[in-house]
Length: 178
Image (spheres, rainbow, N blue to C red):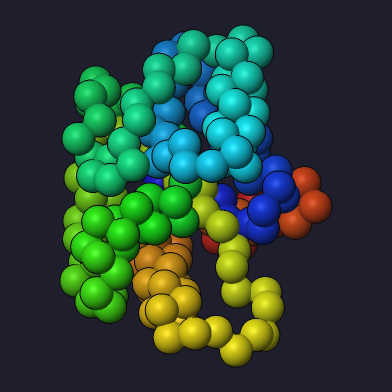
């Protein structure tokens, strides 16, 4: 099963994804973190997520994979939370040198997600909604937004459940009502 949780910054998407993973009833949950400690703000966000998992009633097994998350070592049939697609896409984009080959990057990342979803009993992917502003962006930002938009369309189309987070509330956009 694939669940996608998309929302703005600090909308509660990671908390909602962690809750969904915990509600599966599995005791060992696997968390693939794509974040890289690059500055003070990212360091604070990583620390916040770590504390959230430490304070959980569930056991979270952390896998740090800024790129190629399918290389994470977890048993087949696990509950896996990938946080977050946006950060992972940025890391892959930077690894490619930001050369603008959006199609190749989308294909490679979707292949990674396919490998993950085949191994996981339940895969929950968190992503950011970066499409709310109407600003005129430089070409590199436009290419990145095209990458993220293409990933969201493909990911949601293959998802069993898709949620959009706003102000801490999850709105079911795809899947049977709970």
